[in-house]
Image (cartoon, rainbow over all chains, first blue to last red; front, side, top):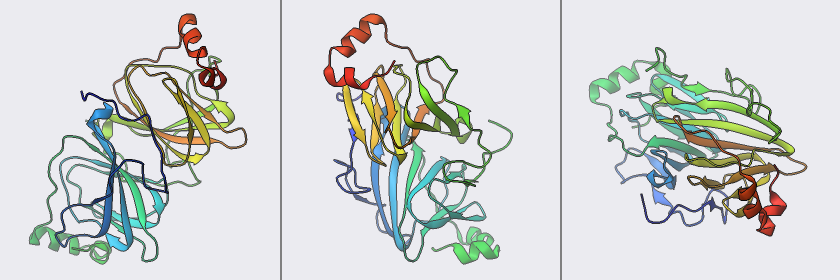
Length: 152
Length: 152
């Protein structure tokens, strides 16, 4: 337990910017993503074993194509975009629920003319993502809709 | 583990109604709440130990005034309203983050002319809520802003 409880109410001085929450880079720049920010809204100290983050992908941007053992639950709350889960591509509407199972490939892309902002829940303890090998990329690229979608 | 994985993408045939998700009563009618529905969007089978529900409180309605050991993380995504956490009352804007700590009193109310719809995360295993005793109600009612807010 931490010494102080989290705040009861995180307000937004401007839309999608929560008071006292740092606006961070998505991750260390490695050329695998484009135009993504991250804010951590809740974490282990909230007592549920999960962390809730808000990611915002700028117009034309995308997250990293990756997979890992831990799961994701994703809910878009701003803008428009699409995603890959496994070998399926989905257009996203606000408040759709996306589930990324263990070891499922996934990538999120914003529309060309709108950002895509989404809540993403993960377990607080989790493994590191891995990126596709050349062989795995060849398999992904063998599916035309996936080949059209992925950026890496 | 369940035999089948949850769907990768829950779409909404109409806003705030997720495909294949039952629209349920908030809980068994007991006179402690008014005009509240519940949809369970994710649960233990999503592998995070938490359940994410969508509650919608109709205009003028409210949830039950209660407390429990488990915590809540609540994010409004529709309409307008306000809430009690502990002995504080907050006006809610869309996408604010509300944290209800262990054993914190809480109640959510919709505006008189708008619904209040919110995501609420809880651990999948959790204790049953308890309602205030007469003595506890007297303490709550000793705070004017709380006395004005609560419905029971």
